[in-house]
Length: 195
Image: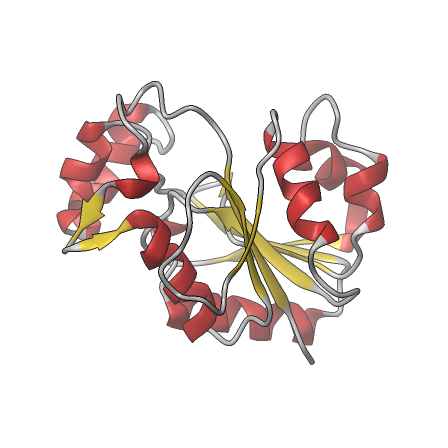
C-alpha cells in the first residue's frame, strides 16, 4: 500500500541561533538528510512543508504555517488521499530502515494511527490512515489532541532506539549527534528520557 510522507519545517530556529535545517551533519544539510531518509524508506510522495528547498527535486515543497499543526495541514493538502507518515525535519536519525520497519508495522497493525514509543515517550515518525482528524482537531495541542481522541485506534509501537525522540533544537544537540549513546545522553540531559 502506498504511504506518503510529510516533513515539517516550521519554527524560527531561535534556540539554534540560525536556520537549523541548513546546518550540516556529516556534510549534508539536515533538510536534505530528512528528505533522503523518507524517500529511501519508500514513502511516496514526500512533501516538505516549511522554509527552504531540498536538493532532491522529487520532494514537493509547500510553505509552512505559523504553528506546527498549520504546517502539517499544508503538507497534508499536498498529498493524495492515502495513508501517510509525518515528522519534523530536524530529526536526522529517522533512518530508512527504521522508517520502513515502522511503515510495515503500521500497515500490518490496521489501527488508524501508529506512533513509535521509547522509554515511555511518543516519538516520530507518526503514521495515520486518514487526514480529516488533523483538520478537525489539533488547534490547541497539535497531534497530541488527535492521539487523545483516538483511543484504541492509536497503536504505540515500541522501538529499541531513542532516535525516534532525538531532534536538533540547539547547537548542543547537533554536537551530540555523533553516536547513539551521545544522543541518548543528550535526551537524558534535556529531560526527554529518564536517566
